Length: 444
Image (cartoon, rainbow, N blue to C red; front, side, top):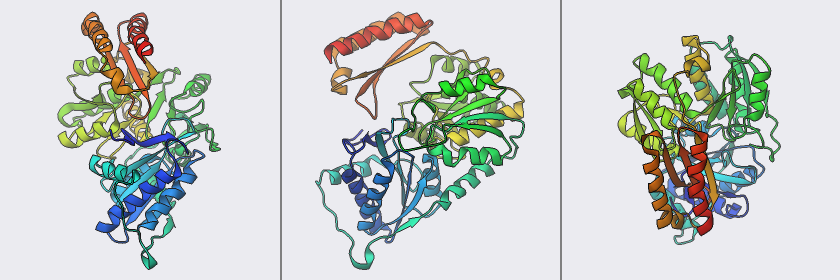
């Protein structure tokens, strides 16, 4: 990770750790960088529904046009919409303004290359140096200054593409949808109903302040209650920028990314469509997923946390399915990044052709109890390298043996250390997690 760029772009408290000046400079350097290579280049900009997104959209557009780039504004859209359009149309890069699942007062800047993936570490480093004014650039003048265009029609192009990937109707399904008052308000209901589904939509009235507030993939309790209250086939909970999905089964129980990978991976494998019979996932995946896939003779490739690392492995090794427990699922034949709506339709595809419920499709997946505690720290590297903590983690690893594991890692976007334990019981998870967290809090 760089000085400003984390695992998912630049993120921070709006107008504090991430202000309009920084957004302006990011736009300015990207316009300069790409306009040198492609004069009159086109940069795509999308945003989620949080209050500060308009502000950052204007700042980025002003910066990019000041160096000669032309900016096309998608307005409110999912992150995967930006990734798809920048790859399949003549944009040199795409920028998504979003802090994903974070509260409304945070925001972020995600930058995609023309290949539809996060930009290189080298380009991130160049942007950071420009932010710190280590380097300088030449501004456009006269008729070389760029223009800003409305490009909301790009959303229709994206939705038409997603819909074209499926040849079945959803009229047999009754679905509850939680839009998290975020980006999916522009896409989910429109496509699901077009494909024939009977839908009940909740949390689809964004006001700039309510994105992810007690709703969506990080707070699915309301959706669970709704699904249990009637005869829904499933519930779909998106996050703020709609690049990930958490599902609720007909019983009201949560179905996270591990379940989705298991269900879709098994279906693809049985139908000889899982290339190299391998699924890519991260170190945060549940131990039960690994054991259940192993029982099906499906291999796993394990990466660091972050969808960019999952996708890198998929490209390098030609795997077609990968994702994270958090609900970022990548279907490489269709997309370059996690896409909550695409994931929902892929899951519905399995349900449709197998004629089974989510409960039936996942009955052989035995998930280990897991506890994750996030602890605020002043210095992540100091905590991770502390001898007392390293020693305690090693002791716990020995005690858990093959029936559990512990993982201590830094957040890629916040000043947090994440302590995760999987074990055979909730009591053991609590016991071992507490041992490490107590040390972190004492020395922090």
